[in-house]
Length: 140
Image (cartoon, rainbow, N blue to C red):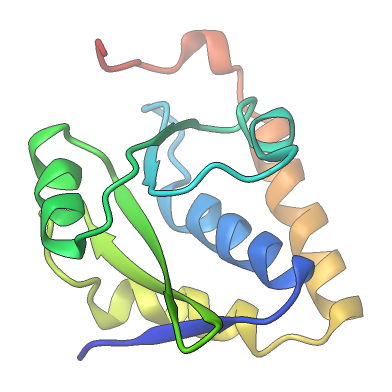
């Protein structure tokens, strides 16, 4: 099933990124996430948890192919439609994300602000408990 998420405010960006971090959390591998747009202060906030790369593709098919060919765990494709910003998800195979992935995003996007802050802290604590220097990193 193809799900698209509407991004309305700054907290929705955070929900998208923390959902992605929750999905790719691993105790053995350093996660890799592909996005198609650079956002202010994005790298400062998230680079310590996962490797994020920006590939500015206007076409979602080219973006999806890059997710797969470059071995990313997940791809976050942001696009505009009629003055609104939306998010489409791709899994590591380059296909539209399955229900397993979208269920994580659905849960976090459905949270209120206070609930999300608690979930965000939990995700941050999960990552802080890892020794990142011991995680396997894919050569880039």
